[in-house]
Length: 262
Image (cartoon, rainbow, N blue to C red; front, side, top):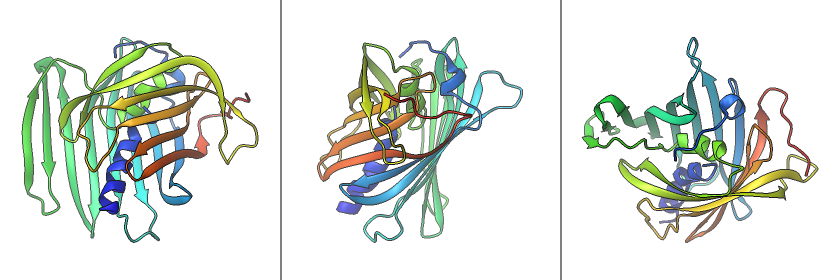
């Protein structure tokens, strides 16, 4: 039971580092960015997450974003190994996902989920392929809504920091539609991470995800982002039935960026 709960939390943690608001993409979507985080349950390291951003050659406003989530191999109760890929366009200052792909690895085999967002047809095509190679889900959602996927939410949250408002964000999670409430705030605060000696200037958000709650998952989350144009996610927390999960920035590559002092 604990293993299943922690696997769900690992996927949900992407939402923390998470409308129609416009923004300047020059720093939030930074070609060559690499952000590496450790994930902890209490004082136990349960794994890590790495996010990368790559600009599509010849396309001014299109990016391929990737995330790798891996559990700590020394912990026998947790088996998490995911790759996420989100193909994103910045259109009229808004984040518009075009395709989301998720791969899960287990016992040398791979399963996949693919979401194709077909805006001209007001459709989202969803296909899940199991570990045995058989198609398990093949369905279509009819909607003209622009949904955020499990990875684009990471960038959506960054792009909309430094605002004092509440957003109800349509999301596509676990092959179904749902909403996420995010309370953005303009309040400046400081936050500490172990890899930096000084307190870092940051902005704070919190919220609730309304996707299917399983095994007592509350959906509540909070996050701290650097108070500058890069809006780097620094730390995030999620309250679940088994306790508190923390995500913390360990290494970064973003041009000459360094955490701003508080």
